[in-house]
Image 1 (cartoon, rainbow, N blue to C red):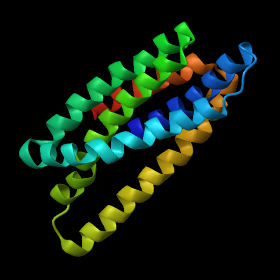
Image 2 (cartoon, rainbow, N blue to C red):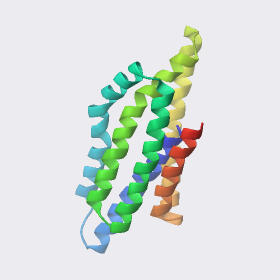
Image 3 (tube, rainbow, N blue to C red):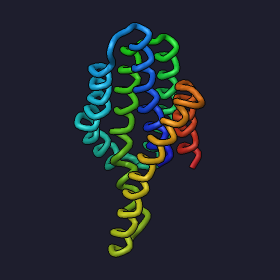
Image 4 (tube, one colour):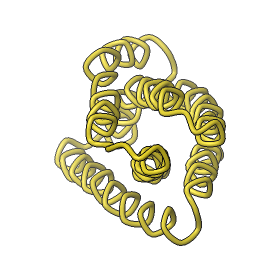
Length: 170
């Protein structure tokens, strides 16, 4: 869940970075932001099923740990993209990050059923897990906007990377 909030930090920071890059070139950013949104959504359609197969075949905790560490490294690519002021590099980093997230999600969502065995309690646990996921979307995007504005876009990318390391530790 921590990584999900971090991803939203990065999403808001990417929008801000794209707007900043476009404004320095005296161009508009609507098409670039639309492409960013598409690149955030497309990996879910393409790679979640692969994550499901991996979750069924391997230890879910190990998959999550490996993907958290990979996600931390991918999050650092956003720093390079921003330093280069490259929208294309932001797109590549976004596609990679969302691919990692798409592969991660089946392990995350299915691990609840491994931890809670009672069927009535499982329904409650799944509901709480999904509510927490939604809350992290809300917290991550609002805090990402605040951080991008007052702490800087690069800080959001650092926070995202750290969120993956925190998730890997716990």
